[in-house]
Amino acid sequence: MNKKNLGSIHLQVMWNRLLAVVEEQAQALLRTAFSPIVRECGDLSAGIFDTKGRMLAQAVTGTPGHVNSMAESVKHFIKEFPIPDMREGDAYVTNDPWRGTGHLNDLVVTTPAFRNGRVVALFSCTSHLTDIGGLGFGPMGRDVFMEGLSVPFLKILDQGRWNETLLAVLRANTRLPVELEGDLNSLISCNRTGCERAFAMMDEFGLDVLDDLADTIIDNSQTAVLSAIRKLPAGAYENSMVIDGYEKELVLKAAITINDDGVTVDYSGTSGPSEYGINVPMSYTSAYTCFALRCVLAPEVANNAGSLAPIKVTAPKDCLLNAQRPAPVSSRHVIGQMLPDVIFGCLRQIIPERVPAEGASCLWLMNFRQPSKGGNPGFALTAVTNGGAGARPGKDGLSATAYPSGVRGTPVEIIEALTPLLFWRKELRKGSGGAGQWRGGHGLSIEIENRDDRDVELLSAFDRVIHPARGCSGGGDGAKGALWLRSNRPIKPKGLGIIAPGDVLIVNTPGGGGIGSPNRRDKKLIEKDALDDLA
Image (cartoon, rainbow, N blue to C red; front, side, top):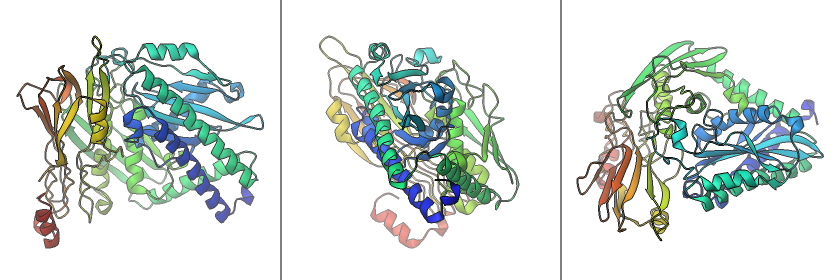
């Protein structure tokens, strides 16, 4: 089949089938993953790529940080393992933060799809592993070597045979060897499912290769995004935001330049790197920058290599958002997930009717851990909690929602079943959303008791504790986040804390900013706020 045979209806049907293929791929990972943050919360990505390494389609299930960084990582896989050298049954793996998804806890697996003896596509997927060794999933490391085990680009399957040496190394360097091996099997199965579904689609439509379909998808997507960009006034727009940081507050600054060729985002003026693990590799910076622009400029266009092509992202070498190896990057999400708010501040100057206010933005991940001792095996678990999203033009912000990551909160029942922690309270935090004509989303109030006779460690990486989400156009700021222990022992928003036996951790996640003067809020909405007891 060639391009002239790809009529619009025929193309749309094949495109929808391709979306179904990658969604089944992602669901296979979601249903078989061992780590709760993957199977319960959806911290993953899945997609199909052509033989040039261009992402054709991504699954809806997944996070922008994983998807858009994975979109570049497949090109690195092809450089390390050229297409002519690939063999049927091969699969490749890495957790390289700079050529993967930004930190060591994410394993990326890429699998060539062989049909009639040739590679017709590549499937790739990512999932978050709870533990990869080292200091653990927290920001305390001073370089990437302290943070965990690095896996360079390696074969995990060689013509269907497991790389037993690599598996042995992985098992020996994690606190959760069973879970890690299970997650790796899940990733392998995820891509295998994608291959099987793609072959069924190709059989149905009589396709020997995907090259013509790939070119058409990429060209159409790029054209659509460029068309949307060209409707905007050309020019340069700047915005900056101050955030808490680790050892000191930090500045995120962006300048967006719009012209007929696309959009360029430059982060010059952003603070230099931190000494701790909140630095962001360029792959993750680009991922959330592109996501923010796509949300506002052309949200209806498919996310693939074509729609991402008109966007260029730059940052000074060795700044906070372009961390250089071997900088610590374990908690890169704390800064990276703030970037959409910075981008929205630029775009608000020209299209305010499409742009939300600032939100809690970065996930409030509670990383609980108890080292093994004697007959007690201990545990490690990442509990996902969320703050409030910023108000939207014409709508209130969503409460307790992980925007921009899209990760779901971990069910209380799962945490209590796997740990000695007991939740006494988890409810929307009254009054935490910024006031306005359109109110910001509310955060959460959470109380968790350590019911064990041993200490439980908390690896914290929380922001918006000092600098809240800002409202706009007269809207109020969201409430700041906070955490403390009932015993009044000190505990920091970033770093390692201890929850003693019987003590209770109290967490208030941040609220989102409001839009417009509160005096303009509809009376019915005010009455509803009072009825819900959230005002």
